[in-house]
Length: 302
Image (cartoon, rainbow, N blue to C red):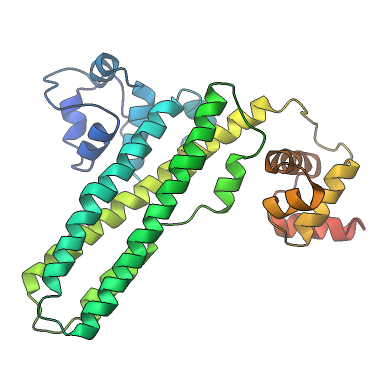
């Protein structure tokens, strides 16, 4: 649904959908669709391009409302390969277009500044682009191949989406700091039009990255979590007693250890740790680290 309560449907005209918000043109490109669709419906345009209609509409819903959170029923109709394609093309857009353009604008903005301002802003933006690049590289080399392997039923027992969720960073926060630095600390002789141009680019990139993060948090991670749950054969019922291995893992959680640290300590895979933690949550009905720690102490397990 959109922010005004209207439902996006496969039968609506693609032109009408694109007319709702300019940012949707970026979604169109990153899922592999093109303009020139005439009076064709969303479903017709997607079908001709081999794109899953439900996935496209779901991403559009995220762009139209930050509060949109799909149900599991909606996620069941998502094509994760299309989601990954969208995220990969987003990475390309950010690094090859948006960040490059912003870098050129900042260079122009710094022309009348002294060496100190130039050094500080250059280093700040350079550190940010490096952090962004590392974030994308991790997704490209670890997360996406894992999801694709799971879809191909060729999963290696050395990773879980929970590991990604645990370390998932919010990549747009530093852009907010950059905005504040530009608005507050640039000398008055800087060109005002260039300042406005830089702030506009930062705002658009910041907004788009926020949507990118929401898509990962509310579509990719929950959908893969569900796949992992279906793939787990050791399903348990609420109220079952914890096994000896689960008690060991619960002890590690209560000690504040990360999943990879628990795995190393017990000489098991991260995926096994994640599976046991899910079973612990099902059996105890407790999901938070603080709650599990309290549970362990109250039951003399730690």
